[in-house]
Length: 159
Image 1 (cartoon, helix red, strand yellow):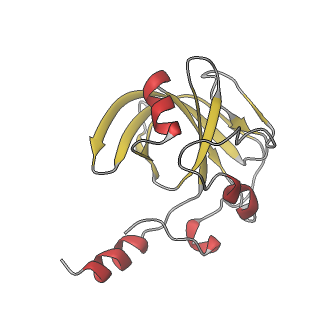
Image 2: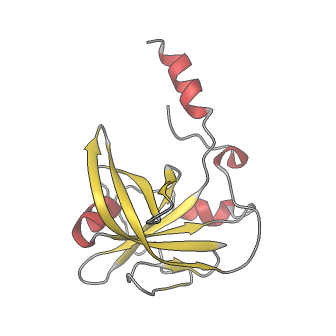
């Protein structure tokens, strides 16, 4: 397999930009920037996220089985960048970001366009990521707008 062709082909996928939130059993919250998100079923409503192995968020999702998907608006690149790094949490990433919790206790960003709250119903460990399938436990729309897409940020993830 030719490496550069594989990388370019995988990077040509269209990805949204999301803030994936979670919590641990002590109700400490964390969030990271995610792009590998998809709906997998209408009935029941299911979604899947891919989470890098060994990260703080992956450990928290494994611990509690809950996560939120916060849909960002086009133009919220600065907010998205806040959640890019580090892979392991240093301090509280949500200390300067307004959020609230609801059904699952995972953080919902007040500035997000919309959100889904999910409970893990299946998980698969493959390669350097975990795939978590979540049943939608709650959802909300804060306002209408166009969602942020990875290609518009100039960032690359995948390949």
